[in-house]
Image (cartoon, rainbow, N blue to C red; front, side, top):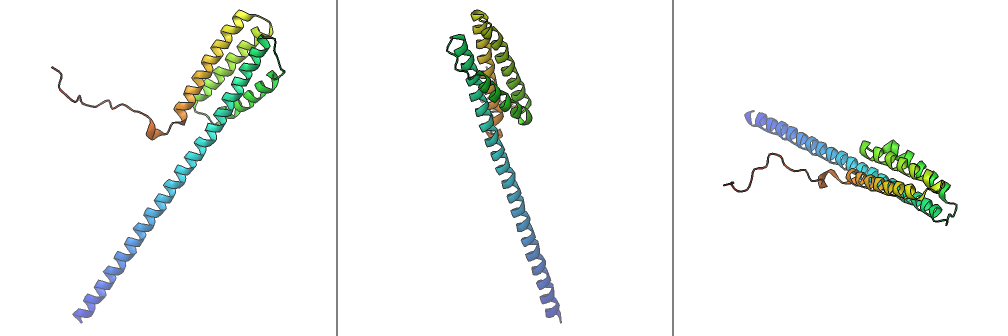
Length: 169
């Protein structure tokens, strides 16, 4: 009788252990799959943003080039199309971008619009200054985009509590 009880007890312990082990393994697999899906979604989202930001920069530089061609009396009639493309992509950027990128994009568009007036009125000196400010704004936008698209694990974060490696004398 004692042997039968010991066998039954051993079987129950084995069954519970097997069930617990399988449950823990399944739980671990579900967690890994969830993390993988989240990572894949983030990579896809960053890739979509990367393409949008690239297209916006290309449209903005096209707008800039169209303004320069007007300044040099070589206008090819692309100002409206490039400006419209830049605005369309800018609106999309405003919907999905972080605050620094959105503000940099708005500033870049404002600077290009500010440059457009003097160029269309033939004020060469103020137009060149305005175009330089527009390029600086485009560079600031590009830096904001880079900082948004960089992976969090690649960001350098200095340790504030780091101890010096040697004593100061």
